[in-house]
Length: 88
Length: 542
Image 1 (cartoon, helix red, strand yellow):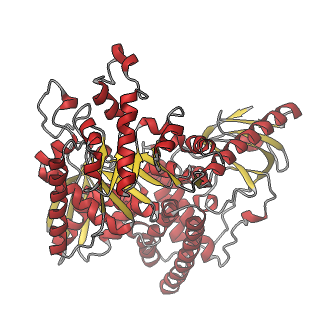
Image 2 (cartoon, helix red, strand yellow):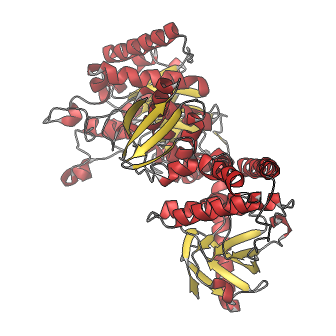
Image 3 (tube, chains in turn brown, red):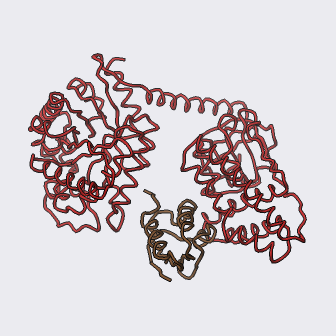
């Protein structure tokens, strides 16, 4: 299992569109992927779980993956968050 | 008079249509065979998926991908482990019907989300319920969707609550306003109404008790008011206002589509100066024929770290795509002078405008410069991008900047990354020395762009920020005009395009003169595009 912390920098945080992008990205991996925001955690493959984390701009989240492609999964999701989901 | 939260501005006068609040259909709650229920649910999910995709496709056709994605995000709910996954395991564990399972999970999630102390997340309860209701209706075998097309023209739609997927199907042709009792500013219903350009008000508590289908109403989405059964005078007042607004819009639209030619048949292009994708949207609405200046500084400001190559690439690519082969002139970072970056250490200078700024700073910080150039090059395959260097004062500077670009091209080539190998390279003419040597530069560059704001202050030695000498800042000073004329002539002689992206391009007094000098490209701020087009049309006498 590996994990990586990343700061959410897009203005709206994990709203529907970014959460949807995150789910689509997470779905590509077989690993179990969990996102932590403080003491709340949720399945990265569940849009509802992600929304319920109520991640806002400047929150530091932890992306944790467990499985055969955990490395790739964490790298890809971290990059997506760092790219601010294509927001301006 | 009733009030509410206006989420989409504009006026409307029309007849109310009150949408019935749906009564949830009754269903059997228990079931013997979990396998059968699971299969039913699977089929209902398939059907829901098709319906949502169709609604999203409708929005994509009428609006754009961004708004379609709002409805498409509902597709994620259909395979959400916390939603549908939970419903399947409920069927398995509790021997309940598929309807009961979906209903229970929807309710519980609805309660959770409504309980959040975050307005945005509260609104997501409505999205979850929208999807839940759809699945249950599909389980009942009949998904009778209300046909919004049957509404007569001039309908003001009233509802207790309007589902996002309903709003997505509403059309401006017959619905002139939307009023709901519930909902907030960040509801997807509000976002879609705004995108569709339909005046909308939400959170109008108990409005349904004072209107019936057929009641005449005025919706003033600008003031946030609803007038029920207004008198003829008020109705007429609003009809006049609506007419005026329409005329104004048509005027803009009329200029926006016009192509401008001089008497000699020379094509005049009107470009926009933009700072980001939002500006670009306004620019395109107002008929921009391209972008004459993309100030990339804004990508670098108001943040704690340097934007990565990937981030920049995405923005440039999106802009290029939205412009659909129209010219996109990207100016490389113009920082220093009055603009600084918190994460880039810059020494205090006593004369920042004459100091280490723009191209000078980029050449001293090759990492920043190369990152940006690679991002621009990579984006260049998605449209018609040209790259422009600011603050060039001598030939050596331009050559050095160009060689950095060349080395970036090589880097990409080695990696097999595609880019437009014949990308046009231009320079700003904003320093008198560059204008004086325009003839020489014109042989080396692919295009010029005159930046008048700096050109004026450097030519006249007048700080444009200093109020005490503002009377000396004269854009029409003969010396300034001479330099401009020299630049344009040099470009014409060399057969390269010359653009003007400074304030002077939108100065009504200067436009006839600039046309006479032979300027072909006027780049102005998106908000004044229509106005400048009308001035240009008058000046060319058509």
